Length: 419
Image (cartoon, rainbow, N blue to C red):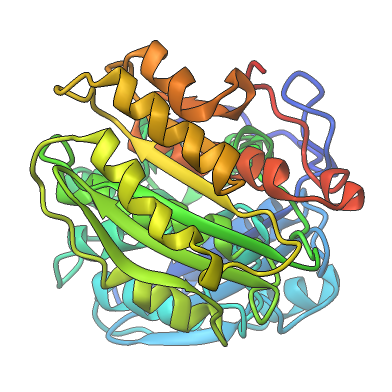
């Protein structure tokens, strides 16, 4: 879209009351084109755009964290998300930033941004549920293909914004921007018009953390055992399966994973395949790698077989004393076998004999509600979402349900999902 709004000031100390009442908490990385086509004079206008934009945010270590990469032939790190603790330090760096010139290699820079800035070591709070944003500001077509790199960034739960100036290619900007593109893509015909974008971009980023329903503290409880039973049937596409795995990682990484949390993972279709048994992980990276290695079968759906197979997680020799385990079942398709009696019997064994709390996550509307109630035991343990891309939005609610510590529950942003 071509934006022709007038410039005005929008303060983002907190999100608009019409959206929610929580203060804006986010990690935001700017990927700024510093190639030769920009020119020094126009680069200064980009700097002023950033100064105006960030002037509207509460930039600090516990509110909005900011990182910056300038890119051309190669990416150049300006500062990480945790480099500066105060807003004025960030603004001073932007004012003094040197224009580098060179080619336009956006894909290379997206990959650099993902591996260098969106990590816990660099200050990313993704593992705490803090919304993650990145904004690409460019004036021309990339000399490398951006789509695959942009899709990888988005699959990590990072919302990507694209700001195109002058000769930027619209199709490429659409490839970069997150869905819906109408909210994540901005275009102006000249660098002089860039200043008029500040209000619209600020408003979008400011309200987005509230819309994501994310939480700002992780649950530091004593002990929790969680097994995941995720859908790997024929109705799932590879991209949807990746989103299911991202959902698993988002939930587990919300806890203090070392020693405190044991996790097991199984995939199901016509069979139940244990990917790894209940165990602890030394690091989040180690856990993420094991989840990423889980392979689905892409065959039919048999929930009775899946539930029965999941009981292997909860045998007496695999249990921890005084720890009530949870089983999170994720599905998007109806069980063609429709053996409700068998599903009910096995679910009752899990709840009453194995002493497991079963949580059901339903994607779409094709699962029989009677079957869902038989599995979950009570409606409060059923969570629905319209698509796999929305799974990240219900993760905070599930973590809240898992958490036993009342203080943890108080650290979440109130959800506007129906109970």
